[in-house]
Image (tube, rainbow, N blue to C red; front, side):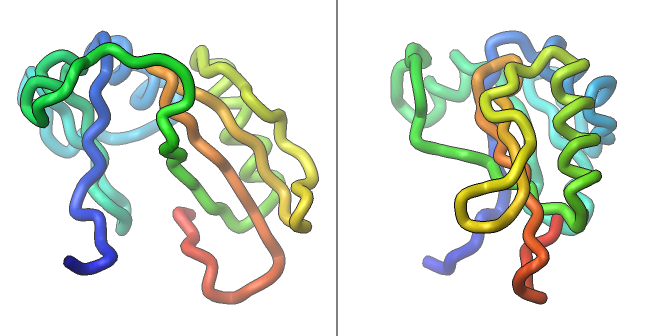
Length: 137
């Protein structure tokens, strides 16, 4: 198996609410909307989609119940501190829970984190070090 993620599929409690958060709040564009699931334009990265939480849990053979930190963080690396601030503001305005406000990070970078409406954690970051950053934009 290669170190590659073909797509990221997140189980959400309310598909319409999740779509509004990412489309209206963060500016994502829909690639395919199948009614029970939706996939967004990947813009050069992995395909990201949502599926009803109960249905997705059933598909993979687990319970849809869960709480607390899942152990997974979605990371989004940008090219400036200002862009981190902009995205954090967009997410907060759209209803995200700000977990760590944007600021200096212990390792020397700059970033912040938020949880979307279903509790998925996004870590935003910028670092002036290294030319091979996995930039999202």
